[in-house]
Length: 126
Image 1 (cartoon, rainbow, N blue to C red):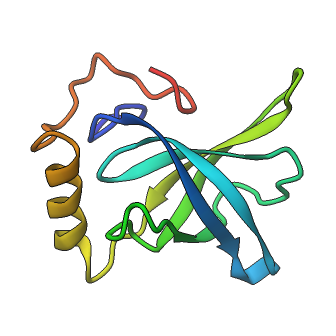
Image 2: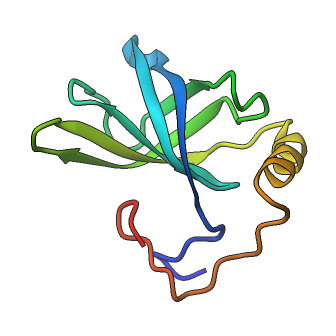
């Protein structure tokens, strides 16, 4: 797969999530902005101090099959009236990979075909 091409399309969402970076003993709350089978974009408070390649633990009661571990792929600080941080994560799928795929498809309108090369990844934007 060429660099910059997403394997799965993202679906816009606005869902609360609790995160932690255990290695740095930091945690907080955020909002899932969009999500796919392989990852997500999460909006965090501007005070977020994590960095690229950190490993997040995730808890999301409204998405019970959400993978619980993810690696940060990119971090973007957004200035303005309400400064915040956007992070792109890739799930580190584990034993519940099949359960996550089934849950995702059942709750998001069916199977998600692989996304074509016309949608280049650009730090969380199409």
